[in-house]
Image 1 (cartoon, rainbow over the protein chains, first blue to last red):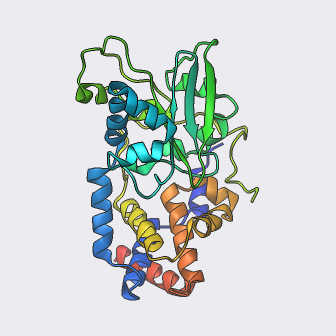
Image 2: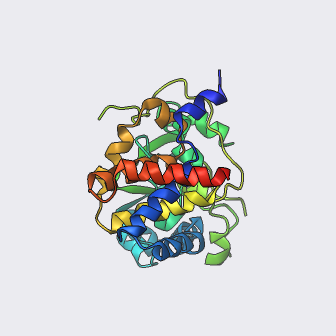
Length: 201
Length: 104
């Protein structure tokens, strides 16, 4: 039974004010510069997000040489597009095929490739996703609306503090004449985590 | 460490709840917390392992009920205390003061 009052006793009261308290103390002692915090927030809001990863995937769909490189050395291939940095230092790209569907989790915490996908959604960091996707991935994927056929193998990849995964979804049918930009618009965040597939053309 | 954070395979956690069109930050303090976490990392106050350790030592009930930004507050605060930059008493006093001001 969920008891909201019990939660209140365990959680930090007025947590936002405690964050404010810590920030003002750290600033007062010269450990951090509040102006640099504004810049970090702006960078996340404006420059990071799944649209970066979508460009990587679209380029790989268009350019077979880039795709080969991306699957062999994800870190270097992604770096050429500029999507590298904290939480994206070591990248491994895994390819979905007609016989294998890949899905990514971080069972121990919230490891996620920030430069290519931005910040993780709450469900990715939640206990139910982390607990369940490793033992009943098909059931979890079904809840995301993804019914993986029995003859398709499901592979679950558990991230670590040092290494992050990016799923390369299958290119949708009927996209032969598409530009890279048009293709990128079909690549969703969930399709690069593996809890979804690319949008239909 | 085989703590509550080691969630892979545990039963009884319920369904995965997905929020449609989820914003990056639900409240302003979450963005401040993210930025403070990165700034303190850049300042060399902790490395990845030191950052994770206090989260893994959280009370299991607190761990399961808190948001990730609250977990980050716990570890950044603990690391700053361990590094001798602030004391728990200073953070408590400032927090209390801000809560008092809010009520006025």
